[in-house]
Image (cartoon, rainbow, N blue to C red; front, side, top):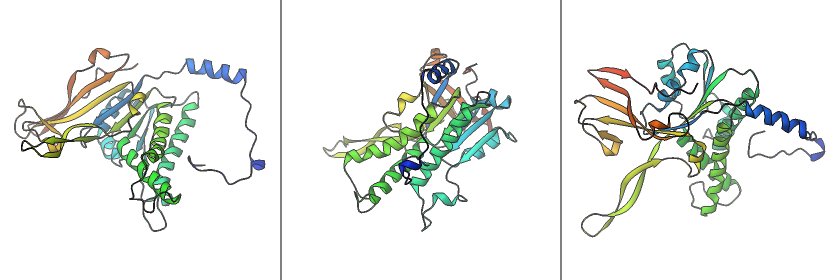
Length: 313
């Protein structure tokens, strides 16, 4: 049964709930002592800033050792990157969510059913959770690729729910601020479940969105302008992360509108992607606040550097 739905079966047909007692919780307590949760990392940046590639490179040891890496592909773009970085690696399991061959995610009029999309994510997370409970599982890591897109899906699912319940007359209508709790609930449930998976390394990717404020245009008028950027996630999302890395593209001449910063050390036609370590709890905290070039293109040739010093063995 998908999350957020209710069963229509009468109570008398439901199986009795198991009894949880001292033995159950003692075993659970001892089992949890053995769990190793090292990495819950957010990779944040504009489009095409190597977020997925960096996540995969930080799982390189697991991939080369034959461990399974599952990618919940919200943005529908992970496979091309992973096939390029790790060709022929069948232990990388890409799970596309918006799959045109999946009839369950479309309405009768062939429009996208966002409630079904978010339910599909939750089903896949449930299946992963069951796999991770197996004592000898071979899962080395999980990548949730497209957290910002998923937040938008949650908003669409919320609007569809409000429409069905008669709270709004059209899915584009405005509504009371408190109704946003429904979007946040759907989003938080998936993020929290992924965070709690019994696997040592989990990576999330998110986009940036502009911060807009009214500023004085110098002539006494207030105009709406972009004054910076922030991660496109629900405000309580940060508590799930033990590491945050922000990724930015650099060229000789910057382009603020495109999110490209200037680096006068680069020549015309050259560019680089740099990683700024914004949060690093526990191991490697000495790198907090440092910036590193992970990818550069010079003389028409690409050079991948990654962040090889980040190891959690």
